[in-house]
Image (cartoon, rainbow, N blue to C red):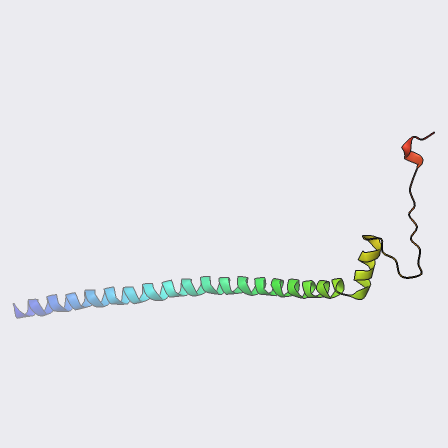
Length: 101
């Protein structure tokens, strides 16, 4: 009888060890999947950061251009019709399509 109890205890211990090892293997596998997912997310975010950095550089250059004296003068001349001192502004109109025979 004592031998049977030892055998049952060993069997139960073996089952517990198998379940424990199975849990460890499962957790390692889940951790590996999570690590792979996070790596992909990091790679994706790094690409997004690189694109945003390029866009930031482009926008800074555009701001510098828009704030330049040449650009401001060009807009003032083209859109507002301003002229420098001593210059004359000529406006050419096309009367051909008005039907005024």
